[in-house]
Length: 128
Image (tube, rainbow, N blue to C red):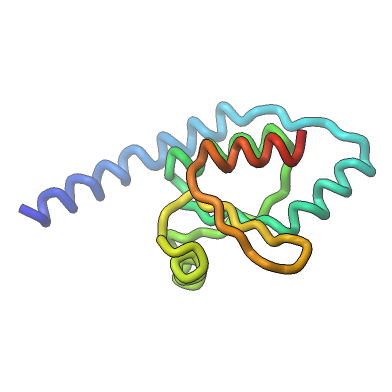
C-alpha cells in the first residue's frame, strides 16, 4: 500500500510540476525599477541572503515571484537535487522544509526563516 501512495504522488508531481513552472513563467510580475545606486545597494544586501527551495514547490514559487516583483537577486539553492544544500538546510535550520530563507547578519551569523508568508513579509519590509 505504501508503494501505491508513493507512486501516486510521484506521478502527480511529474504531471503538475511542468504546469506550475509554466504558470510561474507566464505570470512573472514586472520588477520594481530603482535608481542605479539604489539597485546596487539592494544587490549588495542580497548577497547576505539565500533561498533554499524546490523548483516546483508552490510555496517556493510564491517567494520567487515576490523576489521578481521586488527585483531581488537572491541566490537560489536547490535543496531537492543538491545533497550539499539539503544537508546545510537540515543542519543549519533543523529541518529539510522549503522554502527557507537564510539570512546572514552584520556579524556573520546565520538565521533561518521558514514559511513563505513570513519570508514574503520580511522581504517586503526590508526592501520596500
